Length: 310
Image 1 (cartoon, rainbow, N blue to C red):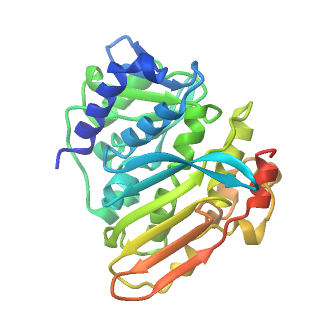
Image 2 (cartoon, rainbow, N blue to C red):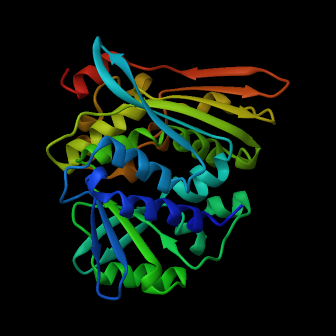
């Protein structure tokens, strides 16, 4: 298997080749790093969001959309499946790199993180890579500049000419699609945090509704979290039993039963003050090979309808 960054770079090349069709803008920065605007100054799109989710998972997941109902309203849903959950979801897709310069803030996800491998998940999976390219998707409300690209190049040890920064805002159609594609990642990460070996997760399948695009970043953050915490469904196949499978689903439906914007406002948007169990998919099935099948959590269409203004 090629490196995660090499596989993601091939998908970035595809995005550049079909930028017009995908409604993506491509910008070359000073230093020749490339910024791909998937949904910051452009509105974003469903196809762009699905390709960006593929880039974030380094091509190790299949992403598609389906139509289904939420409280009687037809809405698109994103489905993701992967037979490489630890690599695709934790070592690549997960958001774990806080980018900050004098005038820029963003959250990085994607395979460039594996070139640094400082997060605990890399020790749990036992993975780190060296590559000639660095692909870091950046969630932000403004496009990354040359200072950001230089920071990424320095940390990953690749030249700026080999840095690719797909960027999107939460409050974009791309942002809603990319968020919905994170359901399986949240479940596998939650299991890992509980002490389960992520390498023992053999496959992951998930789906979640695409939240309607909000008019501001804060509302978008709340809606896309609602889509996962109240609407996401995940199926995991694992090869080892575990006594804490019942803790893998979100506690939102039980503890809050209301759109999370109000919960976030009460916490003054300090996510670190909220229980980590909140940031998980609504319902999870864990199928132990040769053993039991565990079903935990539940979805809540009424809360989604309120959150989505249906």
